[in-house]
Image (cartoon, rainbow over all chains, first blue to last red; front, side, top):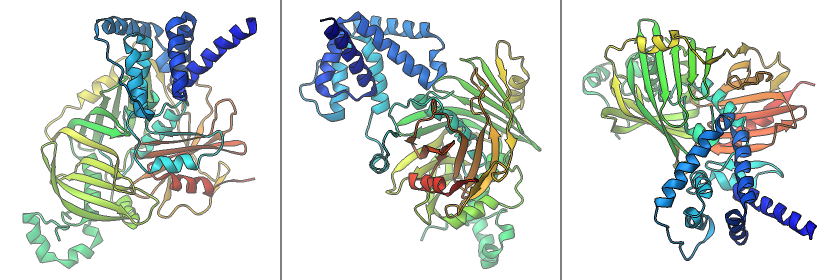
Length: 190
Length: 334
């Protein structure tokens, strides 16, 4: 008994983590959502995972947890005043992901903040071409990231910034393109 | 064929001088409105020798960000201010080779000396090199941010690089818009001025004042960049991918802005084909931090991989296959 309850909460944590990574299949999404709704501990865990993710991606994001709190509180208040969107009947693939996430929005403000991020990060299909080839060629354990997926290497942005700095000497460059916030959006660059 | 579009006034001159002008490379940098290669030189020089201010938007991989740019050319002095308008605030001020970057959210100020662009290039070396790898054509005229523009297409001569479409302001040559195109002509990333004023009298104070201001409450970071040679660092390169050559090699800490400045400097070698750049980073492998990864962001591809005791990161605005060629050519001396 003890064992089973312990492993069940592990399962919840595991599925929350997978959900965060966008790796949860549809069947498990529902149970993850309901765990999140009913279990305060699961919500705490969810929040902690995101904090960990944020710190991994950028120390800047972890500077003021209070701001995050305030944002969530404001969002909750706003959402309480929002009409509840209806869940679409059919869902398929990645598109369904987004729609699925809209439904519990009013219920779970915390989820919404993240769902928003997922929509942005996993949004439209990447440029055809690059991705297929990249994924196919990926070795075991290698992470392949194309455009809007979440990146969990805090250092990548620094290499990008260092690269941009030298590209500044390029013969052809729209002035100002060197300093971009696109990396900031995707990778949480400094 | 409308590929060579002659400005009325200069068209007359061109008519008279004819073939002599086209074959005379000494004049290439001077006035070559119809000569596509000359355009590259003009674009390069305009970015440095003109004063302008405007707002530009950059988009890649479905994201858009914008920056405000002020550039002042006053005699031999160059002043520049770039402000990122989206996300965390970031301001960059530059007076010739001195650069100050402010990050108000984290209260970090980075003070550094940067390599100035060849401000008065005697010979447009990079433009000429680019012509070896790209076919340059003028493909028409257009209007960008209310400025008349000449549109150029730079078509790669092989599959090692991406094509680019450039919009250059007709009179000054200032670059108004660029697009990097994938193998099927799809736009991988683009940047463009959405508002731009060229010329006019701009006061250097907009750059100098913030640079002289006391940085109260800021943590000031001064990263040191040391010039070095690949050879001296124990690395060698076999045959480079066609058209690329080594531009610079230096050691620098990457985490300059972070609290922990215990970071070991990373070796960065930069290669260019005259138009696009590839950076190759090398540092000691650290199992804690280093995980193999490949990313694609707009036109920028990145590869991270372990090579024995070393961790190699290659970042470039070129296809992944080209990045892999760079990886393969890099050799550690035993």
